[in-house]
Amino acid sequence: MEASLEAHLEQLVRRHAELSEALAGSGLGGAEFAKLSKEYSELSPVVEGIDSLKRVRDEASSIANIAETTEDAELQQLAEEELRILLERLPGLEQQVRLALLPRDMDDQRNAILEVRAGTGGEEAALFAAELFRMYQRYAGLRGWRFEILDLSETGLGGCKEASAEISGGDVFARLKFESGVHRVQRVPETEAGGRIHTSAATVAVLPEAEEVDVRIDEKELRIDVFRASGPGGQSVNTTDSAVRITHLPTGLVVIQQDEKSQHKNKAKALKVLRSRLYDMERQARDTARAAERKSQVGTGDRSERIRTYNFPQGRVTDHRINLTLYKIEKVMSGEGLDEIVDAILTEEQAARLAAVGG
Image (cartoon, rainbow, N blue to C red; front, side, top):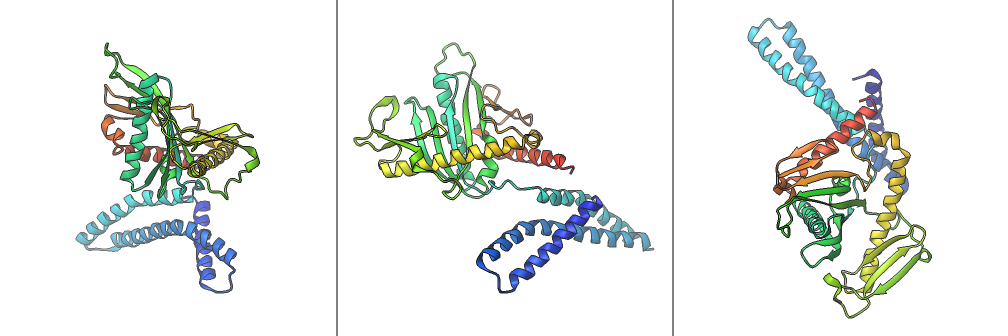
């Protein structure tokens, strides 16, 4: 490691010790205690990594000394073998420390709002959108996340025009944020007599869930319309005007919520989605302002970017951003194989960020 980085690590260890001492004392106000606790908890994993690196370095130095000074051939051989194992561990530990030093995405710990919409391709696109939505639902179940459907606009033939859900749990946005974009499917539709392969698409958006304190919404800037909820094909499924359409006048964003029988519950859900979309717009604006940094990362966050192709005849899934192809489409669609793609994307993104800061 470079001398400047080593000096920075020592500084972090000292700061961590100072915070520990300050928090153990008395006289801190509530706000000051919370501020120092947050800094301490953020530094702790970095310092743990530094400590592990130091222990292995010290142990390697001690064993190297034994290997050089001992006159016992058997002991020397054992020491050299142990030294080889320790030296092989060092690059990985150094990499862990570098990764821990990277600035964190402040939204990584948030829950997420998932939105899936059928794109070009008619009913086949709607069927694919429904399959993608179920894929994320199964994936959430496998990770122990809570998956609450907010809206589901079905076509009546098993597909859906659009669907949204709130996903809650640990590291939800951190693991799903790179799923945003255009997902393309290539396969022979069940309705295609000629057996020709069709290409259709669905768009996925993953938004960090915003709290009321994150985005203030002025009721005066909203137009709220209520109407009777409808099911597939347009038939009425409710006898009261419980469905809610909220239009945010400054941005033109429109959110429709009709899954609940209560107008009050539909309004609350619609406001939650609207708040997250507004927060996401702010996030996108921040990312655009850091365009140079974004270019070194995986994907652009652009909703129109084609990110992945699911080719059913060949049984393959290809993520175009990292040139990863897996021949296990059934496992991916069941949610079971999605972690392999997500982990590869996160690894690539970390590598790009390290390269951007000269790591």
